[in-house]
Amino acid sequence: MELIQVKDSIIADKCDELLTLLILDERKYDANISSQVKIQGWYSTTLEDTNRVTYAMVEENKVVGFVHGYIKDIAGGMVDETVALLDALYVIPRYRGQGIGKLLVERFEKWGSLKGATFIDLSVLNDNKVAFNLYKKKEYIPLKSYLRKKL
Image (cartoon, rainbow, N blue to C red; front, side):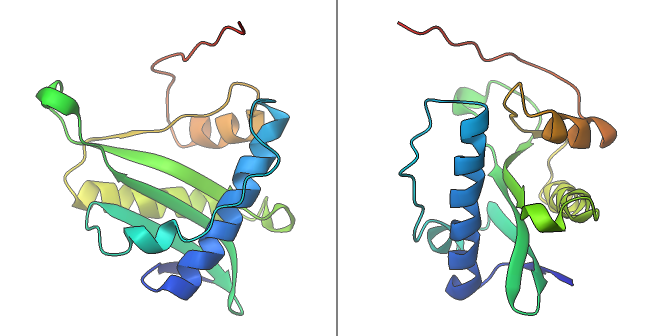
């Protein structure tokens, strides 16, 4: 297996497919997510943006996991520190438990540090215990809560 930075549209399109799987997987935790979601062409639009990055774990030309994030633009300079946002992390179920998610997070953390970030923010659905445990092992701590009320 090889961990690569995504720089071409072919691999980016494979990451779109995994993003679709990630979103559909999140339906277990949020019934409001549409079952008709299909992401196409998203990561290709981010390839030239130097404040965004996507890394993929590839095995024999198959993307088995990816991480995507960016440097957060905080409106009005409300914070003094640069923050990187880990926006998406997904590993195909059959490849989980092999440390791939950990490696992808560590590579994103390194990129964030190189970009001058002093913090990494991310969000996790409350019931996604697997993700919570991964981030807890990586020393992430809860910061905010996002609440919802059905009307």
